[in-house]
Image (tube, rainbow, N blue to C red; front, side, top):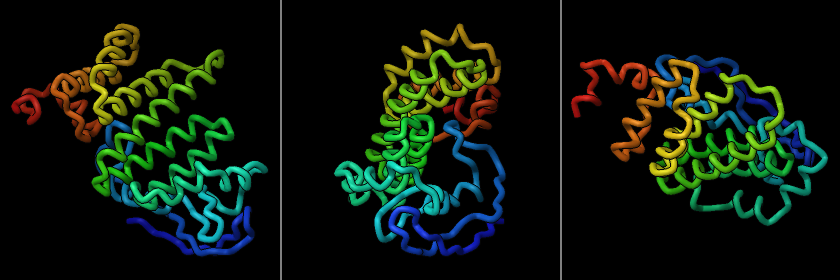
Length: 232
């Protein structure tokens, strides 16, 4: 069960108050998707993950907080155009605008996840091309995040998790050729057996040009001789 609460929040940019809903508690039953999207009921709480000020258009996870650069960022043309972009659902625009702020502040890891969240919103709204756009942008941002983190101490688990995510983003964005090349160049370097199993499943899907959504449970079960996928 998901429980929520209504709050009056003062925007830290324009100082206007507005009502927003936040999640007090939720749960999830089942397996997350390959790109980590959680199952229900948490899956349906995305509308509460971000707040948009109805007065100035500031989009963030907490309107009561902002950096010194936000006021300038939300007035630039790129931000305003995205905020009002009719191609995307309103919630997706909020996530994409938050990503613009995060990119401006060099938080490319956070910006990547905001764009992925926008892709999930587009999935739910059956905006396939917009979802592909978001995933391609997420790949670019994830690459930037990895470049910035070069030289830092990052364990193999994090590197391999990022690699698994990138492959699913590429497959869902129908970039099958580049996904195959990346897998061919990196499969032998992987250490974690669970990661290898998931990526073998990705190879199976990529070879079929399959861009549909699948779960981690399906990835772990796909070699089962009774698996539906193996009998298609």
